[in-house]
Length: 89
Image 1: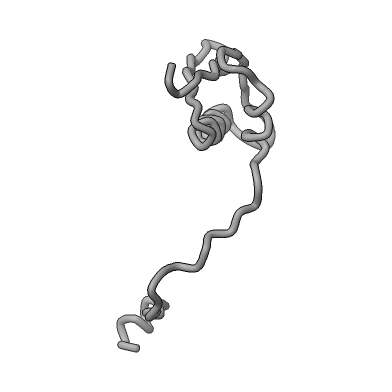
Image 2: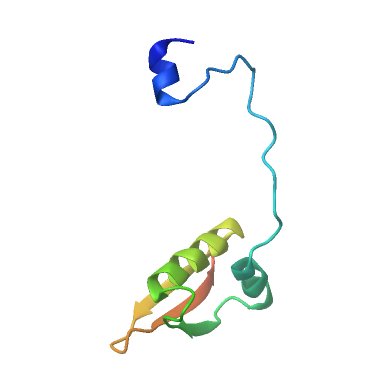
């Protein structure tokens, strides 16, 4: 190990590939989106756990991972309206 590697706290591994990725199952947003049909419109707002923007990013990521997408509109009162859309439509 070179001194630079030691200073950076890394170890060069001599393996062919990374070990398999572990899975923790579906997240809360994926479980929620599974229950909703395409075209469903719902609103989100800030709460103690998560800001409205953070919720939107989480919902969008969950939808994309499930082959769906979302359309969003920001409202004057700080809420966001989200429509769940089939990725093909």
